[in-house]
Length: 153
Image (cartoon, rainbow, N blue to C red; front, side, top):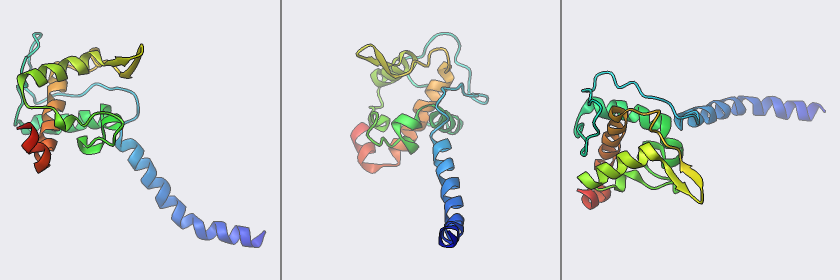
């Protein structure tokens, strides 16, 4: 009994940092519930959908998009937009108008297979500004990887 208590007392200092680190990682992937994004500071885009990302190269959009991505996308598409295999690596989307339209449409409508959502629809959660900010963030992450940047540019 004494040995068990002594072992537990010795393990406790290691267990606390591990528990805190695990909690931080879980929160880094979002809380699991899709959430709206504050797009204050971005040019409002109005009611009509844009066919092309209007925020390309916009530092404020990258900042807002990073927050939105981490809250809504990272748990499936990976931290820093680097897929861990559960969902596609979004950094590999071409930087074309067709890819922009696909991105907007897919985020809004989600993805279904066999009658089940593999990705939830965000049409009622994310504004057009938020979706384009996330796209801008993903493109900025793609530019950081020379192999991906060469493939999509």
